[in-house]
Image (cartoon, rainbow, N blue to C red; front, top):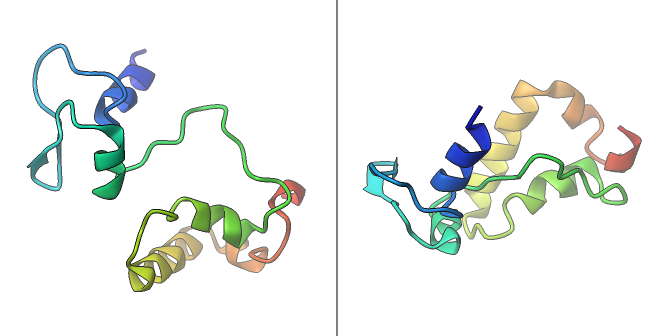
Length: 98
């Protein structure tokens, strides 16, 4: 109970009733969602699915479309593949076939 509200508050979609929200030591309370995404925090609401005609790799890269640090994106991709090795095996496969 309340998980969606907490995530929406962290993401800047709704303002908190009280208290503050901090990310990486910075106060992001009631900041614009675009600013929060630029800081490296994103939220994919429940019910969103993959882009079925894009590859698994391209679906993962969609989560990094605002990032300019391509080396960091590559490191993060390797970390994801470390957590979920099956995604590396199927990186070129259409995500809709998972």
